[in-house]
Image 1 (cartoon, rainbow, N blue to C red):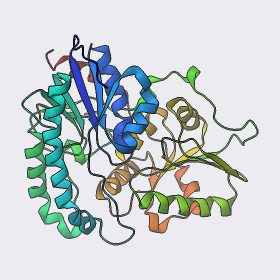
Image 2 (image 1 turned 180 degrees about the vertical axis):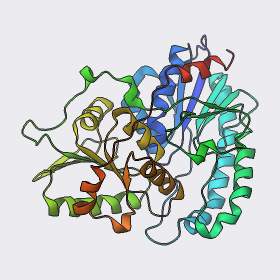
Image 3 (image 1 turned 135 degrees about the vertical axis):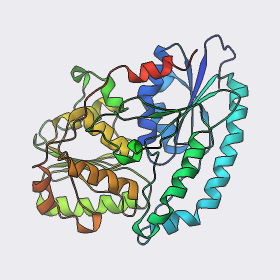
Length: 370
C-alpha cells in the first residue's frame, strides 16, 4: 500500500523485466534520489520486483507495473524470435504508457525514471530514461537497416525529458559505439557506470562460503532470459565438473537461497549485495554474460573475466569484442567455449577497469530542477 501523505517530492523508478541487471543498476539511482530528498516508489514486476524488495526492504515503497518478458531462442536467429514477439511487446509498451499515468495520479509523482522501458514517457511528470544503447547493432544480414533503426530509437528516446547514459565520455569506456557515435539525441547526459557494488564498504562484505572451501575459486554469474540462462548453466556445470576446479555458481534466481554442493562446485540460487561483493572481490576469475549491467559490476572490482555473450544478441557480442580489443577481458562464443583452453587465456587479460567519475549522477539529479 502507498501512504496517503505526499509531503516530499516523489520519484517512480521502473526497471525493465529482462533479467536482473536492469533492476540492480537502479539501486544507486534510488539511493541518489533519496539523498536528493525524493520519496521513491519502485514500480516493477516479476523477478526485478522480488529482487528489489529483498535488497531494499522498507527503504522504498512498491507497486506492480506489468511489463513484457522476452524469451530467447534455443537455436537459430534471435532477430526472427524477437520479430515474432514484436506485436505483444509493442502492445505492452502502449499499456505501460497508460499505466504510468494512472500511477502518477495515485502517487502524486513529479519524476519518472525508466530503465529501458520505452513506454514510460508522459506529460504529467518529468521523465528520465536510462540507456547505454543509443545505437543498435544489427546482424550482418541487416546492417543496411541500422540507420533507420537508429532514427526510430532516437525518436523514442527524445520523447523523454532526459536520457541518462551509464558510462564515461573518455576512453576506455564500457559501451563504445553503442553510446558514443556522432548524432546522439540532444537530451543525453553521461552519468558514469551504475553498480550497486560501488555503494558498499569492503569491511561490510559477508563470506557466504563454507570455511573449508578453496580460496582460489572461479565465480560464475548467470543472468538473462530463458532458455539461454539454463543452457549456459548446464554447459558450465559439465565443463567445470570435468576439470574439477573450485567454482561458485550464482544462478540469478531471487526469492530463494538454495545452496547445493558437489565436490568443488557450489551452486546458490541468489545472494545479497554484501555476499556477492565478497565473491567478486576474492575470486580469481569471473565467467559471465557480457550484459551491460554485469560489465558495470565487474568494473568496480577490476576482475579478470571470461565473457560469453548470449547467442544471437548482437549488443552483448559487440560489448564483449569491445573489451577484448581494449585488452580488458577475453571473450568467446558459447558454441566454441572450452574452459580447459579459455580460462587460461582469460587470465592473461588485464581486467575490466573503468575510471570512477564521482558525482555525475548527483549532478544529473540536481539538473532536473526540483
